[in-house]
Structure formats: structure tokens, C-alpha cells
Image 1 (cartoon, rainbow, N blue to C red):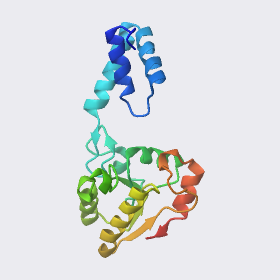
Image 2: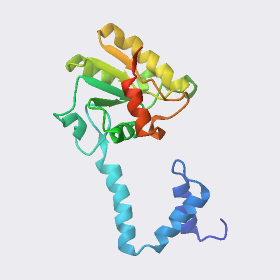
Image 3: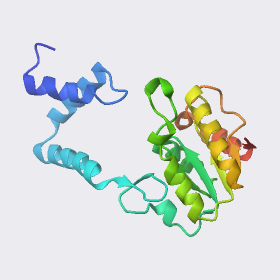
Length: 199
């Protein structure tokens, strides 16, 4: 890397700092930027700034949104009595690809993880409880990943939601232990929705 000019080296390092981007990929992306004309570079940089400044969280479900309330929560065709609780917004995207889930979502923004000092208070759980107190929610589908942290979060949610007289179910069928929902195919996710069970 010492042979690279400083601005290029800095650009590569910035790309490498992105999750899942290795050294070779970072170099390819940096050289792609150099091959762009100035207007393309401006548009690229502006898209990054717009994404960072114009995207916030939906005030209801905590999913990414460019408005106060996201399109899913605004939709009158969705069943607002069924809430699918997921770890992150990538899981929402995965479920929406299935095109079979007609309910709405709630994004926790993580899982309970004592090893990482992440307790329930650091997740969007109080926002979920606020929804339950103001909306007519009949079922909460806990769709956290089948990891140790995901299971701990599912058990915690079940424990605090059951006394509220709400049906709490967990995805089943076809999701292997230790897998992430965002990598599951549409058929597997659909079967998991159909085969959900009480917890």
C-alpha cells in the first residue's frame, strides 16, 4: 500500500472500513471511483450524503424510512394486528421479497448480548411495548435469528409479552440453527411463517 498515492490509499481504507469489504474489493471500488468522471463522483458522493441525512427511523416500527412513518406502516392493505419482530432492517427486506407476509414489522436494532454489554434497554423494545398499548395487536411473531443471542431475545420478548394477553409465536420449519434470516431463500422464509409456533 506504500506505493499508492495518499488520497487513493485513504479512499481504499475508507472502503475497507465497510462491513464485509476486503482489501481486494476495496481496491476495485477505489479504482472504479477514479475511473468516473467528475459529475459521476459528485453524484456518488451526494447519494452517500443523502442516504445519511435523509434516512431516519419510522416512528412506529423503527425501520428505515425517509418519512416520519414508513410506507409499510402507512399501508391500509396490511394487517396491523400482526407484528413481525426482527433484529434489523435487512430482515424486513428478506421478508418483503417473500411477498406472503401481510402484517407489519418492528425492528429491534440488535439482540440481547451480555458478552457485548447489550441489554434489553439498548433495543427498541420499549417502542414495541408502546405500540402494543396503543394498537390492537393480536399476534407478535418473533423472527430473530436462530443464534444464541436471537434465542435469548426471543425468550425475553415472550416473557414480557405473554402477560399482556397477546399471542406470541416463533418462526419454525426449515430455518437451521445459527442461520441469518437475510440469507434464507423465499421458500424457506415462507414455510417458516406458515410453521410458526407458540413460545
